[in-house]
Amino acid sequence: MARKTPTGPPPPPPVQRLRLRYTKRGRLRFTSHRDIARAFERALRRAQVPMAYSAGFSPHPKISWVGAAPTGVASEAEYVEISVAERVDLDRLRSALDESLPAGIDITEVVEAPVGSSLPDRIEASHWGIRLPGVGLDAALQAVSAFLSAESVVVERLMKDGKRQMDARAAVVAMSASATDGDRSCATLDVVVRHVTPAVRPDDVLSGLRIVADLVPPVPPEATRYAQGPLTESGGVGDPLAPDRLHADGATRAAADLEQEAAGAPS
Image 1 (tube, rainbow, N blue to C red):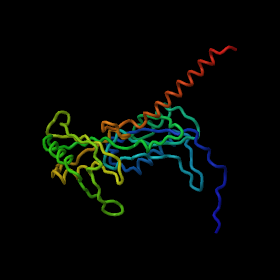
Image 2: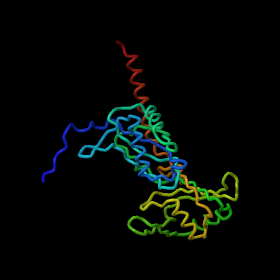
Image 3: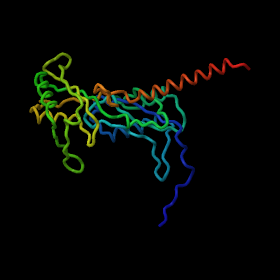
Image 4: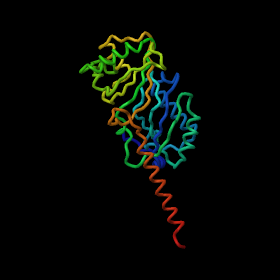
């Protein structure tokens, strides 16, 4: 039987692509990415954002997620791209969307994406903080030293298609330990992890510390992602939206120069 073609006019094309940075805090750290995505779609509707939609039998809003954090961890640096069918004011969109999202998801920045640029290409690594209640600083320092001294630390994770092994050591660019708020009885790990496939997550790093140093926190650790973006020469994580801000500043200056030239031109 021949497939029917969609009726009605096609959806309007995107005129603006936006990149949003948002947080995942508090109890929402235990929310799955699927539920976060649903909350975003509802918020976009409530905020009356003029979304661009795909064509076909089941049009859906043009939303692209970049490097979403796993369930159970908090994040100060999550990213999503959206396409809109009408140009919008970035500050107004951020405010309206922020008000429509549940507490714990905060829109911290909105920038316009230059044509031809790719945000996923800039996401090379994540900077994690892992708080270890009940683990003293001395024990954490010894475990970090053993981990960094190892040539490889193979850990195992249960995935949808079965158990998978990965080298957690190869993905870790840098790791250090410090006392949490000056309390040496509670250590915090500072870890930079390169994005690889499959992804090495904070729980994989902790599994590696258990393998090399028998480090087993007595209570569940608390992981927070503070940044994700390009790897810097010093082994840190850069800001993936910095090129977009530079592009916007350059466009603003160029527009101002044109206006000044037009104002000074003879009539």
